[in-house]
Amino acid sequence: MAGFHRISRAAPLCLLTAFSGLSGALLGGCSGGDTASLGNRLWIDHMPTDRRDPIAAISLGEAGAGGKTAGVFYRGSIFRGAFDTFTWEQGEEGRAELTLLQDEKTVKIRIEGCEPDQGFDYCVHLHGDPQGVRRYQSRRRWGARARADLDLAASLREALADDPEAAALLGEP
Image (cartoon, rainbow, N blue to C red; front, side):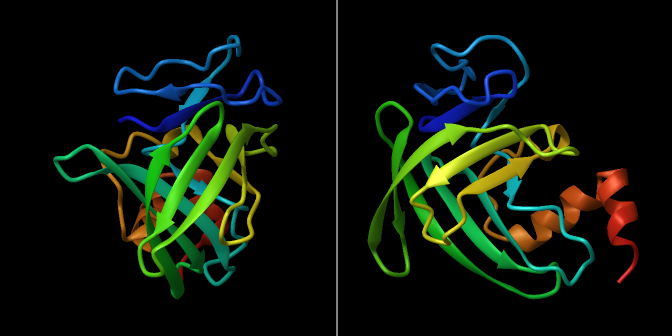
């Protein structure tokens, strides 16, 4: 999947300087540790405290047979929210451009790794995020999605249900 960054947990301050391809190449200049692709992974701004706690989320993936990269921003709870779909174009040295499809507005993004909070495995800063969020985090088990999932609320429910710690935190509706 062209256009995806990889984020190294062991080098959280390292600027993302390369994009991964289908092979999942590591970042140039970053060494060791666990890595996560920005694409094919659920990213959230914080762990919700209950099912009604609104969060911001992002997910990127390959869209369709053409190999284009698309994604969705989501803001809301598991029960209610709003989304904005976009296309993603790789840039150079930790940069990308996304086009918000509803507004046909192009936004420049700068991407860098960061230190994840306890309970998360990966962290990324997206400078220029149109939601106003700068920091997203993810867990190892929230990766490996095959394509862009435009139903991010369903992805969130699925990821949290498959995550025993998060499922216990959120309990039943």
